[in-house]
Length: 313
Ligand code: GLN
Image (cartoon, rainbow, N blue to C red; front, side, top):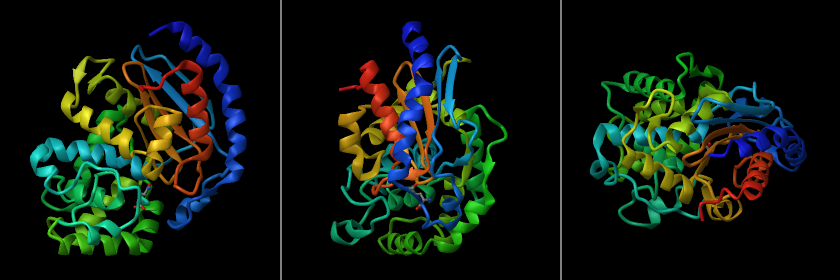
């Protein structure tokens, strides 16, 4: 990687953040999980980390927020580690849906009624049921431990207010989970599975945590600082492919054209992305577009990717 590019990034980023931040007013902060509506609509922060440990941050990068759907990438990896590919892909498919992230339409329409992919809500709930452990708290503790290891941050923890807020209002996810149970997709007790899911969605992070987690994926599963293989390369490849085809929900095609990087967004406004082999990137901008992606965040990524020609395609 050229350090010239990194130096240019350092110079240009603060201005780009301010330009993209203006788009925030065009969207809305998520409110279907009531606690999320407290997020600052005009915030935009980013952290970029390279393999030598150099970092750049700009904007509201000290803001902490819950991972929401970004967590689905890493529970998928943990489920693959626990069960192997064959077992995981007997419960979830490998295809984008074109539907909203919380849609349950195809679970009824398309046989055998398994979720189309692990990054929509139905798929991630199915994945939660595959995490190894005696009971839900045990499974959740393993998830949290895994996330802490990947972020290199032992203090990662739940935002209990968001966890409770989601758990109390998740009628749609709950009905989806019961349908999955009926379709023979979910192992174990439905409420226990949902508890694992709500907990991993409510893990609190900063942009720097997301950048560290992304850097491991961008380095094919190796922690560049220690040289240790944390995730098998094959599972990283699977995760990055899903991020490219389904990571931005039903805007993944547009994102692939405009930005061209593997990415995963969450309704808190977070986005985890990477320039493979170069950088891990975490950003947050809580104002969302209609598809549930950070408006200012996508705008900023588009500016950076087009300026530095980062698209993989
Ligand atoms: N916890 C959220 C939900 O289940 C995650 C969705 C998201 O970030 N798109 O609705």
